[in-house]
Image (tube, rainbow, N blue to C red):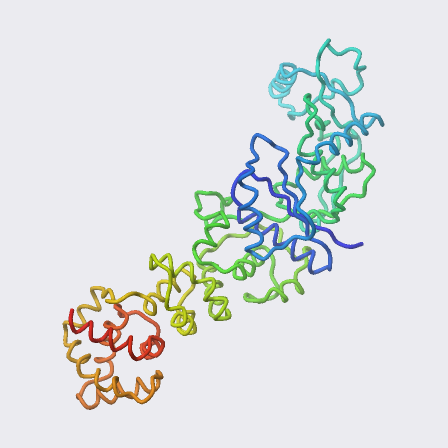
Length: 465
C-alpha cells in the first residue's frame, strides 16, 4: 500500500507554526515512504473561511519547500459528494432524520446538566417514524452510531486509545439546510482522496472516534492515525498569540531561512539520536512518524535563531545574496547598485549573522552611501588621535601594489611600526572611518571588498568630519 498523507488547513487566518509542523511531518513521512503528500483547503465553514487567507497559506508552504503532490482540493466545492454520502447512509438505514427543534435540544442539555449527566444528544428521533414530524419542519440527518462495544484506534503516536460507543452520540451529518458538517466532509474527502495516514494535532483525537464510526458505516477502510502533541510556549502553556510570533510570515519577514525552519520544527517532538543539524535528505531518510514523542514540545526562539545562524553560515553565497538583497534594500531605503561588492562581502557577512536582518545590517558597511554615517563610539575614536593615524596610513595604502586583505594588513602594520604605534591603536581608527562603527566583519576583508578607491575615499572623508 502506497502511503498518502494530507495537510488540511482551514483558511480562517494565518499559517500557524503548529500547522507548519503538522504539514512538515506529513510531508516527511510521505517522502520517507515514497508516497504522496496532498493539500486540501477545508473551506466548508463559509462564515469563518476567508478566501484571502488561502493564497498566504499556499505561499507559506511553498516558501518552506513543502510542495504538495497533484492539485489542491477545495472542500466546499465537493459538498455535493458529502451530501450524497449522507443520503446513501440514510437510504441504507445507517442514518436517520432528526426533527428536534433548537428549543428541545436546549431543554435536553439543561436537564442533563442539572442531573450531572454527560451532555449529548439522546437519540429521541433515532427510531421514530418521520411521519410524526411537525408539518413543515426541516430535519437534520444524523448518523445512527453503534451503541454497544467500543472504538479502538491503534494510534501510531499515542498508542492504543479507546472509547465506549455508549459515550458517543449520533452526530449530525447534514444540517437542516442541507449543508454538510465538517465531520462528514473530512471523512468523505479522506476516503475519496485515498488518504492512508491521518497525521494531525492531538487536539483532533476526540474527533477520530466519531470519524472512525462514520468510515465504517460508509464501508471504507480506516486510515492509520497519528495524533501529534501540540507545541507549547516557553512557559509550558499552549502556544498562542500572547507568546509572540505564531505565524510563519513573521519568521520569513525576520530573516529566517526555510531550511532552518524545517530543521528546527522537525526536532519539535521528534529526534534522531543527538543530531541537531541535518539536511533535508537526512530528515527524509531518518523520519518515521512512529518515532514522534507523546509529550508536548516547547518553542525556543533562541534555539531556532541559533539553528538559523548555522544554516546561514553554510548557505551558498549566491543564494544567500538573493535572499538577503530585499532585506539590504529595505535597510538602505533604496536599490543596491553595488551588487558585486555585496556578493564579495557575503563570505564575511554570513559568519556573523544569525538572521538575514542581521546580515543586512552588516551589509551596510559594504553598500552604504557616502559619507559614511559614523556612530558615537566610532566618532570618539576619531577624535582621540584617530585622524592622525588615518592621515598617516593613507599614503601607504595609495601605493599598495595589490589590493588584497593580506597586502592591506602588511601596509597598515608597516605604518604602525614606523609610527611607533600598536596595530590595536591604528585599526580601530580605520574601522571607524571605513565602517562608521567599531563592530564589523574583519577590517582588512572589508577594505578588500570595498576596493582601493572606495576605501581611501572613506578615509579622506573621515578626516574632513
